[in-house]
Length: 186
Image (cartoon, rainbow, N blue to C red):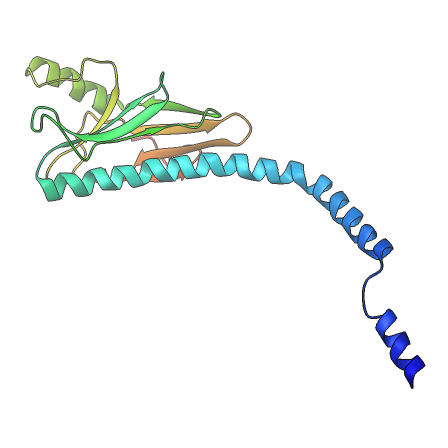
């Protein structure tokens, strides 16, 4: 009886060799999976940046309606930043202004429709206050609509992982994320 208990006690745990073998097997699996995981996390940068920008467009629309003040979502492709603030002709100092930096592996490109170019040229003739700092801007009016001079598409591009387009929806009331090129050129 005592011998039977002793045999059960010695075979109850892992031996050192079994433990080393399992750890070596885990190391091999991780070495094989690491390149795939790094590509996965890089592509998540593209997706999360486009989603953050998309959320900022929705926040701009909501703030414009709730505050009754035009909101300007600006982005600077050279300094790789974008942000949201109230139109400076209405509010001098916006305490709720936000600014974000784009991941260094991403590029931002802005594309205007021919209607947006015509609208921005018309606003120059009517002496509307224009942003002269060279920033691209999306402007949301207090009624929640996007102005005609706002860009049609903002492209987030990553070298290895393609691109995502944040483009105006078909009804031009808001922006939406579209993989690759938008459905149809307006």
